[in-house]
Length: 54
Image (cartoon, rainbow, N blue to C red; front, side):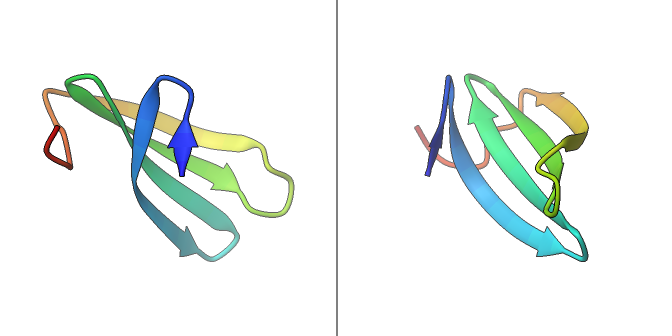
């Protein structure tokens, strides 16, 4: 799975949400998406954290 400008490192389903961990350069974004409607619920960027080796 790919996303524009990054790489998906993890996907999890929890209740009515899908959570993605997306590597973006030298940081990771954690994004929560409503599984029913597809809308983004939350997003946080963690600078200096990469989940996979480059």
